Length: 60
Image 1: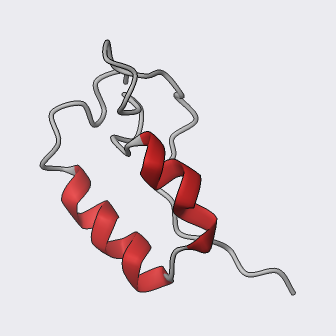
Image 2 (image 1 turned 90 degrees about the horizontal axis):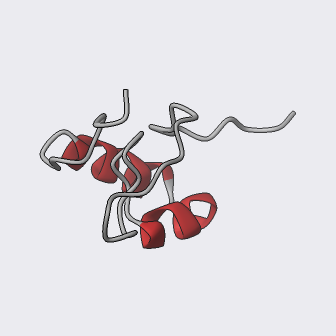
Image 3 (image 1 turned 135 degrees about the horizontal axis):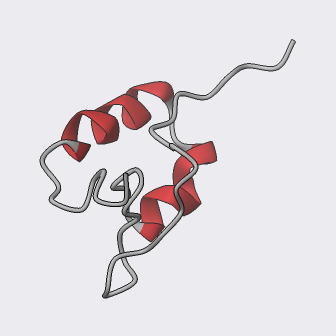
């Protein structure tokens, strides 16, 4: 049975003006690229910090 990954993705994949942070979920390109290889603990730690980023949810 496949395991579901926790993700903040809201299917609004638009980058900020600098092209480094997704305006939908607030993750950096590096975080998005590494997401599948991160542990659940690492993913949850990143998700906890997303609310502190000004770009998070800007496209919603």
